[in-house]
Amino acid sequence: MRQDRAVRRVLALAAALLLTLTVGCARTEAPPAQQSAIAASPAVSAAEQPSEPQPESEPAPEPPADPRPEPQPEPEPPAPEPEPSDPEPPAEDDSWMLLLVNADNPLPEDFTVSLKALRNGQSVDERIYPALQQMFDDARAQGVWPLINESFRTFERQQEIMDKYIARYEAGGSSHDDAVKQARAIVALPGTSEHQLGLALDIIAEKGDNETVWAWLRQNAPRYGFILRYPADKEEITGISYEPWHFRYVGVDDALAITEAGVALEEYLAAIPAAE
Image (cartoon, rainbow, N blue to C red; front, side):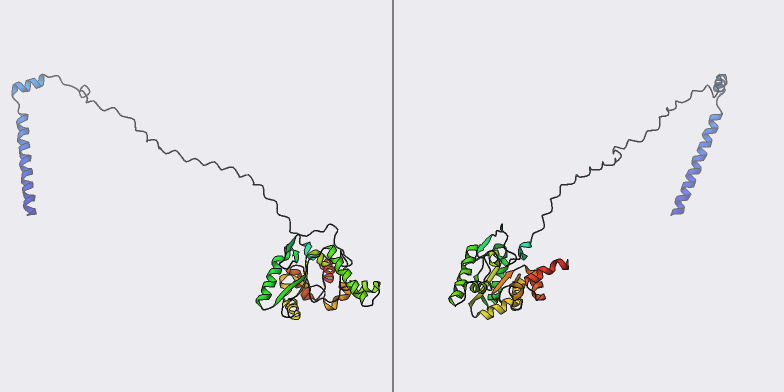
């Protein structure tokens, strides 16, 4: 089939070529008159022949402008002005926890204290109340029931207690001077008592026996910031007889250190400068 189509195309092409040659011969044999006319026509040089108008050359089009502007570097933002820093809060003054008050170190004349009233009419420095309450709550949870018998005292209250003990010893046959000495071994002179700080507590048993309460306090009180203030073997240093009921707040860190070292507060404070 494909060969037949090819043969037909060759034959058609040959016929077209033959027809073209026949027409060309006929045109070359023009009649004489026509030939004369052709010969009489002036020859026109190739230069004189009118040339077909050529299209004017157009300038190459300029590339279209990029509608997007070239990126410009963004100006750097101005450096922020340093904000005024808040002044650091002053370091908390915890010297009040270790304030030493005894016969040789009376209470400062300008001493003041903010008190927290307790349910039994006693009161303490309000700063020790959270630790005191936690200590009592934990003791009661373990079946131990402490009770504060004495806490903050005014100057006048301290004088009343001193006078009571002097009168008791005088009634027992002691001279006044001896009665004062005996009383001072138990009670501090007004102005020299820790009870006037609001940091000292005399604790007894609300339920059960005192020894159970005191034993629990000796073992656990330092974890709450309290120490046994007047141990039995430190009487010559403290100037006060052994008081198993008297506990003093000094802060947790110092209470643990004092108890572990087995020293009185006076010894502990005297050693601080040397350690530094």
